[in-house]
Image (tube, rainbow, N blue to C red; front, side):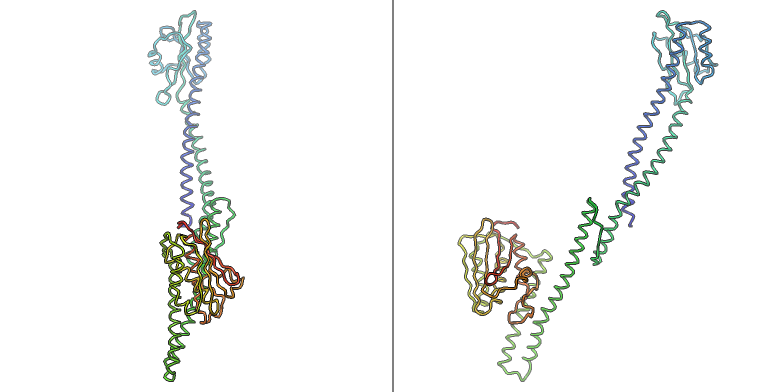
Length: 458
C-alpha cells in the first residue's frame, strides 16, 4: 500500500521515458543505417566511376586486365562490357543473377553513372552502372557488384549496438525513474501517515516543511491543520468542562431548593420563595440550553440567516420592547438615539437577538437601576451601533476574551447575575455571519460597538 504511489508514479514516468527513448532510438537508428547504406552505395558508384575514368583514357585489353586485377582481391566485383552488353572482362565468375541484371539494363544515354540495384534486403547483390564514353560515344559499361551481406552485416552490427545501448539506457532509466519517484513520493507517504494519525485523533504531527514547492506548502498546511485540531480539541475539552460546571450550578440550586421546599416543616411563605428560585433557575437553564443549541448550529453551519433591508430604528425599538419585562424588573432605563430612514442589511430576528443579548448583559452587570444608551452613527458603508452602560466596566485584560464562549469576568458564577456566558459569543457569531464587526472597550462603563453593513454582503 505504501509503495503504491511510488510504483504508479514510477511506472508512469518509466512508460513515458520508454516511449520517448524508443522514438529517439528509432529515428537515430533509421538515420544512421540509411546514412551507412548510402555510403556503401555511393562508394560502390564512386569506385565504378573511377574504373570508368581509367578506361575512358585507355580502352584496351591491358587496361581491362589492370582494372579486373584491382578488384580481384576485393569483396566487390567489376564487370566490363562493350556498348552492346557483351562481357569483355570480369573480376570473378559471374552468377546467374549478375548476368540477368546486366542483360536487363537498357542502353542508356551517356551519364555519370547510376545505381541499378539497391534492394539489399531481398537481392544477393547491389549494383551500379557507369558508362564508358569516348569522343561522345558510349563504348562500354562498367558494372560494379557488392554482396548485400556487407550491408546486412553492417546493419546487423548497428542493430546489436543499438539494442545493447537501448537495454543499458532502459536499465539506467528504470533505476533513475524509480529512485526519483521514491524521493518524490516519500514526503507524500509521510504526509499520508501523519494525516491517518490525525484521523485517529492524534495531533502530534511534525512534517518537514522546508521544501520550496507544492510539497512544502502541503506540509505546512498539514502542520497548521494539526495545530488547529489540537487547539480545537483543547477548546472542546475546556468547553465541555465549562458546560458541565455551568449545568452543575443551576442543577445544584434546583435540587437544593426543591429538597427544602418539599420538607413539611417549611412554611408556606418560604416554600413559595423557594419555588420562585427554582423557576428562575429553570428559566436560566432553559436559556443556556437554547443558546448552546444556537452555537451548535453555528458550528455545524446549519444556523441560517435570511437578511433583508430593514429600518434600523424600528428594529431597535422592537428589541427594547421584547426585553421590557426584564428592564422593568431591574428598573433599568434605555435610551435610543437613531436617525430615521436609516436602513441596514440584516435578518430581523437575528438582529434583535444581537441587541437583546447585549442589553441583557448590560442590565445584569450594571448594578442597581442600570442606565443604558443606544446611539447610532451613520457611516458610508455601515451603521455604527454604540451600546453603552454606566456600570463598572470590565478589567482591561478581560476585553479580548469577552466574546468567547462561557467566558465570565465574574468567576464565582453567583446567581445574583444569572448570566450564561454565551450571549456575547452568539452576538459575535451572528454579526460575523452578516459581514459586520463587534468590539468592546471601557468608556466610563462598558461600550459595545457593532458595525453593521448597509448593503448585502452575505
